[in-house]
Length: 79
Image 1: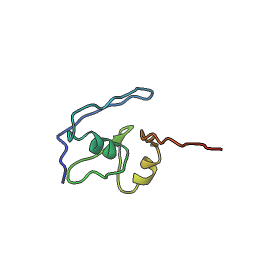
Image 2: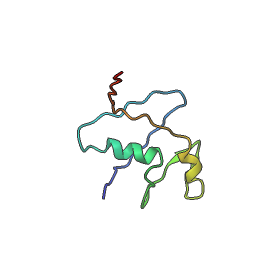
Image 3: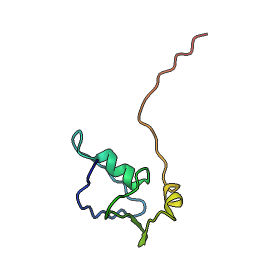
């Protein structure tokens, strides 16, 4: 179980946002909540353009996001 303290975050279109913190501080969990990989439980909610993200519009909200994995894989091309 993970609990995220009350957070009020506003991100404007075109803004670049960096999430920084120590190991285990909740960066990945917060990003999973923001991108729809985790659904807020209990009293939590996510809003987009003054509209609360609900179970009914959750899938369309998730489709707004994409990710690039930072893992680098080296491939050797031998001929």
